[in-house]
Length: 249
Image (cartoon, rainbow, N blue to C red; front, top):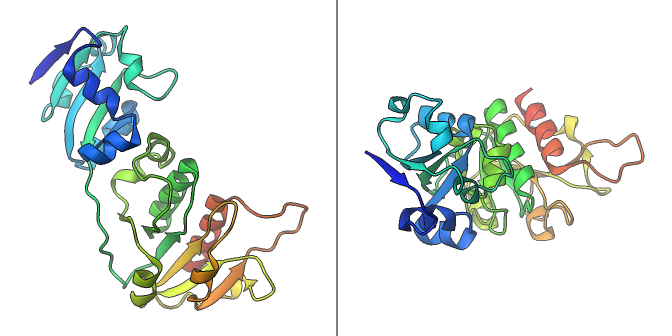
């Protein structure tokens, strides 16, 4: 069905706007994605879309029948931007229901994010994992999976990559996966020399503090990407890409 929203006082408008806040996303089990590409990616992937909202200016430029299957809200253009996090929204967003999972198969490769704090890094890791054929496991304390920055940085991979949240260290250890941690230190060897022959989880640590000592003590191997210049370390998403593609190779 098609509805119109002409005022910021509209209850549905207020609800969609509230999903910009993490606590409201968690309370309601829904989140928003912005932009034409992200919404189309969600539709193509069969995401559980609750509704789609478009500005009235955007509605004049597209065939609204292409959005059949979800309730459609045409929002007055003057108030639409406040529903979005981006400074120059394209005029379309979708509200999508969350489907969280903590179950994962121990017969494939994963990247395990240990308290990754930047949503942009998390989204980029998800995108790279999709490209490399990896699943993604998130420790407690990671950046929020449904943060709009995470979704945007994943560039569509968000909707068709296996991501499991809240995977603690013990659950990871008991999975039977070979645990290979990216870590600085004398005990780490060149990442190209590690044994990736069995299903494994390559572990990427927090941007500031690295992999926790507790988790390092559980790992089968510690590896390091050689640094030939003056940089102290690599960006977490870049390190994740190198390890995943080496494991794939």
